[in-house]
Structures are given as C-alpha cells and as structure tokens.
Image 1: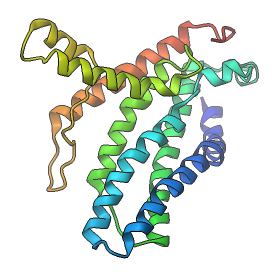
Image 2 (image 1 turned 135 degrees about the horizontal axis):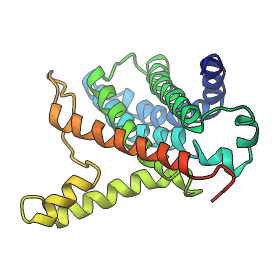
Image 3 (image 1 turned 180 degrees about the horizontal axis):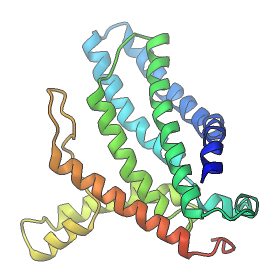
Length: 234
C-alpha cells in the first residue's frame, strides 16, 4: 500500500501528460473558437452563460477520455503482467487509478477555464456549475468503469445507458405504474434539476441519489475487477 501511495504522484503525471493533455486540447478546440466568435458582441453575463453551457458539454467528453480503458486497457495491452508482478491487489490499484484520473479530470476542467480566461475573457463559471459537472462525472465514469473489463468500447456505455434510461423513464413514468416505480429505482438518475443552484443551497435528494448510484456502480466495477481473471482479455 505504501508503495502505491509513493507511485500515485508519478501515476498522476503520466495520466496528466496523456489523458489530461488530450482533454485540454479538446477544450481548446471546442470552447475557444466559440468564445472568440461571441466575445466582441456579448456581455460578460452572456459570456459566463456560454462558458457554463460549453463546460457541461465538454465535461462529458472529458469524462469519457478520463475513464476509457481504465482497467481493461492494461489487460488488453498486457501491462497487467508488469503491474501485478508483485503482490498488489488489482482492486486497490484501480481504485487509486480512478482517484488519480478524477484529479486529472478536475485539473483539465480548471485548465480549460484558465485558458479561456487568459486568451478570451477573464470570467468564472461559478463553483455551483463545477459541482454539477463533477457530480455528473462521478456517475458517468462509474458506469464506464463497470464495462472497462467487459468491452473495448467501454467509454460509450455511460452516455448510452443514461440516454436509454431517460427514454425509458419518459415511456414509463414512475407516477403511472408499479413497474415505472421499479424502473425509476433501478435505472441511473437522469433528472435535469441541478444539484447546486446558482442562487445558493443544495438539492440534497437528487445529489444523494446520484452519489449513491455512482458508489454502487464503482463497487460493482471493483467486484468485476476482482472476480474476472486478469489473464482474460475481452
């Protein structure tokens, strides 16, 4: 365990140079041109609104980049033979790896905001928006992690599952039938209400529901990592 903790900063730098760099480049390509197009005519309030909308979208791309192949990639590329040559628990290692990539995700979001402020306009989207983006990251990344050992295309499962869940919920509202209530409990949360309103306070019920679901999905992902032989690539 102590060895893993000493390795964590190096692991963070590795992920920052690879996944983090890709995230920031994507943010640069998606956000800066749109900000430049609006900067001449938009007010500061409008620029803030635009940045908030774009960060919500960019957050989804960053989540998929941060989460793809987090566990399965090592198996498919054979790196697990070196990683676990010593008696290290895969569950502990990939839990640490998830924490590291979460830190890289947060850094990339802040770096994107910093680049926008430096090159376009010094605006801040607000901590509530960043809180919403981070909580959404926890849910989607946990869903992706579940499929990391099961599919080469694990990165797409999070958004697809949430999309399907939204469609099913609209087709079978929880207030209309018993199976609608059951589906509402089983399916991942897809509500549009924000967890941290800009006028203050916290919407505790949807926040706790989403965090609970994310924790359950993370635990399921670690169970798959533990039970599925590292020698079996999919």
